[in-house]
Length: 141
Image (tube, rainbow, N blue to C red; front, top):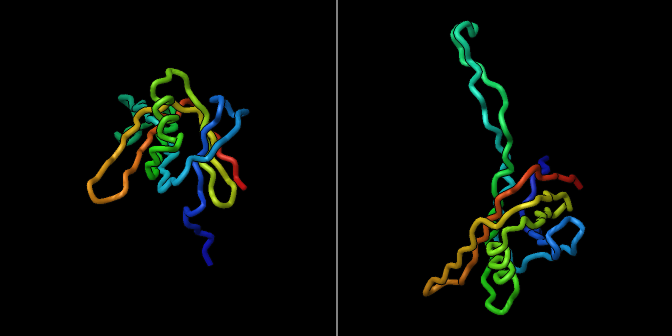
């Protein structure tokens, strides 16, 4: 038996005051959430007497990556205008990705891009990308 789950009922939340203590409001009509994407640099520490001529590595700096949110565009909603405010701000905000079982990623981030897609014969969508700043926090259910 598997414990795998689908993403339905996951939410992306934005803090009202940019901190983890602010009121968290879920964005409306989110259709996809991509991220948090943890990576680590590797530093080559190979030297002239490395065993059997194999390269050696040490762990470098870590990176929380980006979080990209796709949502249906609502010209009367506040999600798009909030995203524009985020990208025009030089101050990091606080965001959460909450999964159906209530586990979540919380992170401080800076809006990196806001993109509106207006096709002739399909729904309008918005894609917002946030760059994670510092260490994100995962809390299990």
